[in-house]
Image (tube, rainbow, N blue to C red; front, side, top):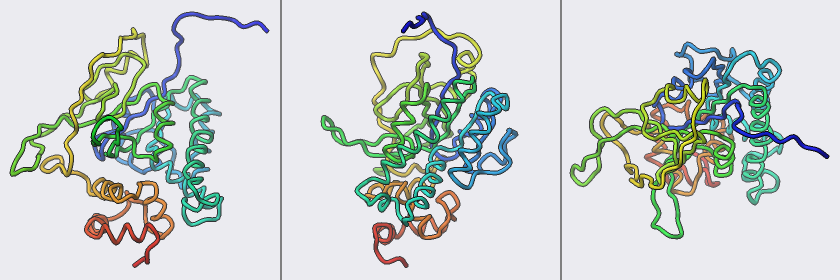
Length: 328
């Protein structure tokens, strides 16, 4: 069998994923990409002047059907935006619970972690491989995700906090490997110590991180620099022109992010506090999302502030309920 051999760079559509804290402007940022079409899984683009499917998908299969529609008609957009990956994963979990005829992902396939393995396998096979078909047709894909601060347990160093994708632990690596660019969007914080606590002061700038740091996941194949202002402009040449590969830096910034609740102008969202407290008590965001579905409650983004604060104040009771205690 003979094979043709080519040399040099090849022009290709781009797999892009950005993630960051609530309300930092991820959807607005994605709206600046070339001719975007949103699959608004979260319902967060209502105030944006963007093209979108006429309703948000309510099931996993409906989400996949929307992707298939763009595969069949690739001229519909230049960039397909999935907003957000973590909400899409919750749709997948609901689909698996239905298929497995179980009320908890822990029970799927007989238990023993098979549910979480199924989530990763289906997310890759059903969604990422579909999106690769779009890439092959020259359509860029941008995936948005929320961020979660999680504790990293290292065999060589004491544990420390870092930002990661707010998806399950087996799905996050799949997304990171799949992307050409993984961008973490952060606030530039000025931190001062007052009465023994760290506090963020002033109005923080929104910055983009494109290279791996101990404090966050990030990567890129195009030599992008870190801490650039949140804007599509640094990416324009990559999407529309030519870029020269740059060497990866030998030194990286190892400053840890501020831990705990950030007060003042950058007050931390109560939902993020709740998810972090649950994580500290051994309950993942995916488990919590499944429990909300199982008990007929709204998704976390639809919970009222009062409900979220009540859960935070009664975190031990909530953890017991999720882990199988008596529901009140």
